Image 1 (cartoon, one colour):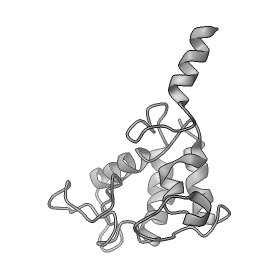
Image 2 (cartoon, rainbow, N blue to C red):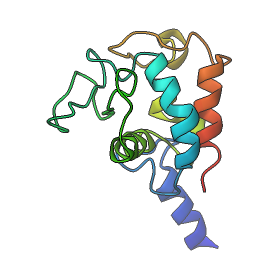
Image 3 (cartoon, rainbow, N blue to C red):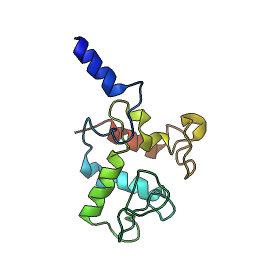
Image 4 (cartoon, rainbow, N blue to C red):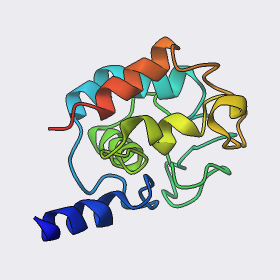
Amino acid sequence: MFLMALLLLLLTGCGQVEPGEEATLGELDHEVFKTNIQAVLDNRGCSNGACHIRDKDDPFAGGPGGNLRLYECTVAPCTAEQLQANHDSTVGMANFVNPASSLLLTKPLAESISAIQHQGGTIFLNRSDLDYLTLLSWIQSPL
């Protein structure tokens, strides 16, 4: 029993999961990503040239977007490999222990709510935003 409690404590820390460790507890549905999540990222401008763009010629280059790197799929459709790369990068921003604490949700949420500054400004005004809820639902449903 003690070991289980210790393991839970180590996994959850103080309610925070370290960057890069967010997606170690599960995997998220790629089909849902392709049909719903990629559209949210494109429609909200996350994958445009000024934000989290991943250069199609140099996948490690891009805008100021921190750890989230995305191929833009609005001008020309992304290949299966590019969609997989977008999926993998997005999953890296998910927190399976506490989905609402995922960087994918907290960074773009209004700073007055999340207390986290997003260089791209406010994307979600509140937690009842439909796109916010779409992302949250995806993170809450690991395979």
